[in-house]
Length: 403
Image 1 (cartoon, rainbow, N blue to C red):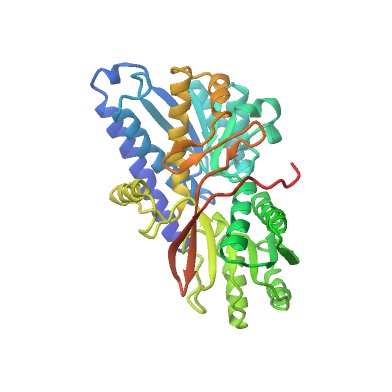
Image 2: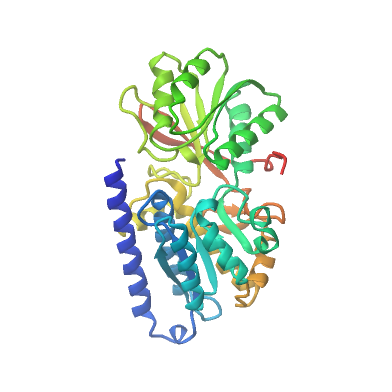
């Protein structure tokens, strides 16, 4: 998918979200509408590097809010989401969070990367607001990065410790791969943590790590990594990276050398935007929230994808599901607090979630992990640039990577 195509899609999502907001507001004419709404204030990126993650999650959240409100809302109070596009500008991100607080929002919503989210998250957390990211994949929206106030932060993304462990269990138990080469992109902590988790769980199961390779995206290191990995002999390659630059270069490089070793990654490889045309992607596996290829095992998820398509934005990756799951989780916590929107009260309920059912399946949190674990991952297999769902995998437990 080209940058211009991604921009057009994101702008379409923004238009759809605005339309949903207007439709929801116009529909509030019954008894439920007379009650004060519970407002979620989103400070996200809708035009730059995080837009392809934030925008689909925002649309999915709007669609799920519409369902919650159609069922009577929370104790008769409708949910409402308002949003501002921070364009990843740190000053704007903080400023917009302050504006949200001035608008008396009840809950904060931030982008899917902790560094970009930090100015808004810090502002919401200091104000005592429950603060949610729909698809952040590390365990940092928590006391780890924000100290005591981080107890009010949660992400409905897949925590890397769980995602990497699930990938390792699929590799060892289902595919019977006994040896692996690990290739880690050090650009993001999420990439590092997924590969760490894979390594820990794969070795626990009895697998052997043949080699550990590292590179940093965008630094012209990938060709030398391809050469070194090509000289290694293993049953599989655990590859932890993303984006449309070094990822296709790595895969194309190996396949051009007639190296057909299976490659496995987590959610970072979701989407067909990075697939090279020649040689085509083959023997490639990744784990994600949902299959967007019309074959997801959940009828509810397939129906939701149909709604997104009808709304003018077909799902491009499974990450949209974190937005819907976050709304389900927020609604559950509000139900348990009897509508109390205090960040402390909501967080006290959310941190105790164990196998709570959302559109994305069962989710769990703990005092240690404020990002989802226990979700059933969809394993997607790509052969000759054709992707299909092959199996549901749930990690037996998150891997212990030393934090």
